[in-house]
Image (cartoon, rainbow, N blue to C red):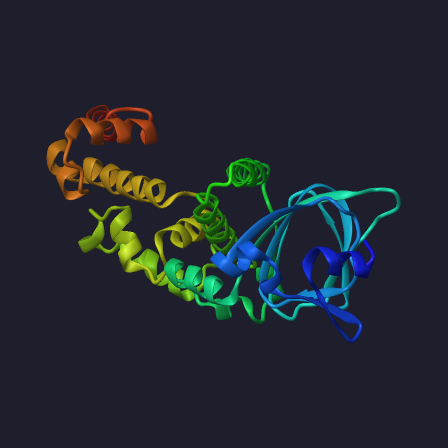
Length: 298
C-alpha cells in the first residue's frame, strides 16, 4: 500500500522517512482506549504508532521489518509492537497474508498489565517476550474471538470493547510465558513457589491458595505453570497430593478418610476418584497391593 493511501485511511502524519499512526485518528481507540481490525493487504510503508499493537498472522506469510531487523512471519506468529517501534510488511513474491490487530492506548495497556499483576517493563527490553509462535489451538481461539468481535461491531453494539480487552489480556499472558527456560530450569521465584506448595503445612492447598502465594494474577500463573510444568495448577496439585497419598498408604496405618482430609479433600468419594485416575486403582486396593508385595518379599 502506498504511503498516501495509508495516510488517507489512518490519518498518519509524516515524520522524516517514517510515518506515524496517531491514535487520535482511530475513533474506537481514541474513545475506548482499544481497537480491533483485520489487515488483508500485503504491504505497508515503514511506520510507527503512538500506541501498543498486537498482531497475529492468521493466513499466508509476510516479510516483516521491525526496527531494521527483517524476518519471515508465517501463520500463527504473534507479535507485540510498542510505541515508537518502526515496522513494515513486505510481500513475499506473489504471496499475501492476513492478520488481525488488537491495539491499546498506553494507559489502557498499563491498566491491563496491572490487572494481570504484570509490569509493563517486562516487555521493554527482551525482544523474546514480544514474539511467539501460537499453537494450533491458540490460533483457533483467537480466530474465533476475532469473528465474534467483528460480528458485534457490525451490529453497532459496544460489547466488543470488553472482548478486545480480554484478548489483549490473553496475549499479554501468553507473551509473559515466552522466552523462559526448559522444564527443570525454573527461575528462582518459581522454585520457591514449588517449595512452598510442597511444604507439609501447605499440602492441603488448592489452586486459589497457589494464586495467593504467587506474585502474579491467576491467568498469568496458569500460563507459567503450563510453561514450566506442562500442567495446570489444579493438575499439578492433584499429582502432588496423590504422591503424598501413595506414600502414606504404603508407610502408615492412616485410614483413607484421614489421608483425604489431610490432603484437603472434603469428600472421600472425590478423593477416591482422583486417586484412581492417577494410580489406576482405588486407594484401598493400592494399599493391599503394596503390602502383599512386601509380604511376598519377606
